[in-house]
Image (cartoon, rainbow, N blue to C red; front, side, top):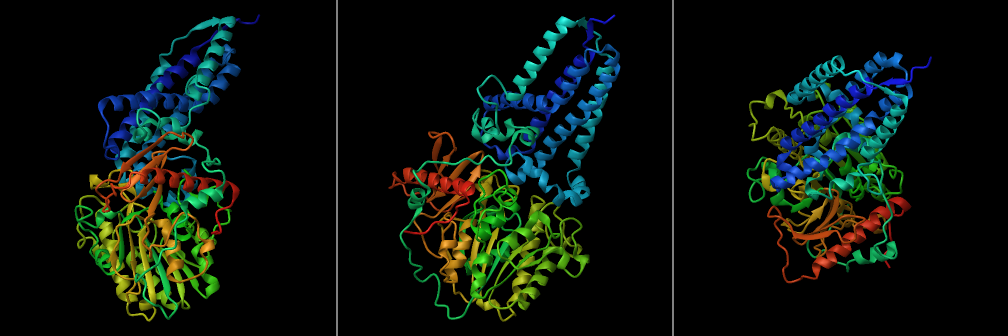
Length: 637
């Protein structure tokens, strides 16, 4: 005789377990907030409570998606009472493994957020290979989070065992079970889509309430991993055509005046990208204390842009910006996106027909961040990484070769290159786990945060590099462009703003002063570097420059910088900014740049704000439509 009653025990166990997991999501959000509180300087208690309330919507969505497989299992076998004990065990194992892993990703992102300024999505998975060898050191460095993770696993296991042991045994008729199943499926579906609205929630919804600046707290990392597509690029039509958008950005020709002296000999170019260098490390009048005395000397000897901007927040985003002029406006880095095969001209590719040899130097292990493949793609024929370095005793134990010995190696290799040459150098030591060579541990002061000691070390390494290079015959015929890939953790709260987290130095230094030393307060950005190099070398290849940057050798009333932060797109220019959210035509905001910028807005030109909005729209249309249509370049009419 068929038993017409069904046991609900596995379902009860599942729902009580998920209720505890929901509490875990709330707890990890609180930990995320406390650890990154300096990133969110302006909020009140009402907003904070609203953040946690709105966050429940995303937590429930993540939990529903994560646990749909176990629900489907119960729906398929739940009618069989003989499998009740087995089903309880399956629920226990599945919920424990899957959901504690989800909570663990929240804890990981609590630390990683400080370096990216956003919740991690699917792009983080492709980066695992780059950090896998650093896991032991990262465990040591962030041991509180490791202990917290183990504690979370232990507590969760104990609670789940108790729930399983003390669970109620309830049997209901088959017809009631059918209704129960419909209710459960409806509830899971409702939770997964985030409510009754017409379309399921996306990450964008997190920035809509209570404040766009607090959207990262509302979100959770499992939601981003599960729901964020690797590419959500859509075509824009702010202007009737992309050519019309391009015309908005065109500027009348600007003379270089006396910025560049007459050059009779082909010049070399060395682009130095400093790992995680913020403007705040330069001390007064920018930051609180100077940790880079050598670089400060170069700012006085070169053309210095204290209002420099990193277009992205990650190292992998800096290479396309600096070497090709491609801004970083997607969640996924260009070099890992589906658009990586688009036709984009790199600096190496542009200069090689004019007799230039090209090489790129990065002391990390070969393949890290795909830098070797990316620089090859941008026309750099030679790549020197850890594999090419001759002595592994200079390995820092985690990332690669310490900066000082690798830069000495770099100087020697540059001396062997055929002249003229274009070279790129990417340092690595100013980065967690903040390692120093033994000989410097009692020489370099600690500073207020661990970053300060390694910044000092990189500064000393650069000094040694320039001292060695200055004795080589190519040195006085070389333009050095020095910038950073992105900023790092902020000690100075004045820089803990959406803008301050992008403020980096940009220095043009020529030992023979072929570029006139000057302090230039115009906004500058990483994507201006390709146009600057082509202008300095007087090459006619302007048709191979993306339309987003400009030459830093020419003063410009339209000097600007383009960034993505807090889910919106910001254009900075002349002491002001406009913030625009794609898809919401009326959702834009004007404002004045903070005091960390040295240029002050022109209060006599109120129409400038409207112009700034039009230019922002033009940049975004050219960027996204260019990605979709693989059409990034325009001929001037």
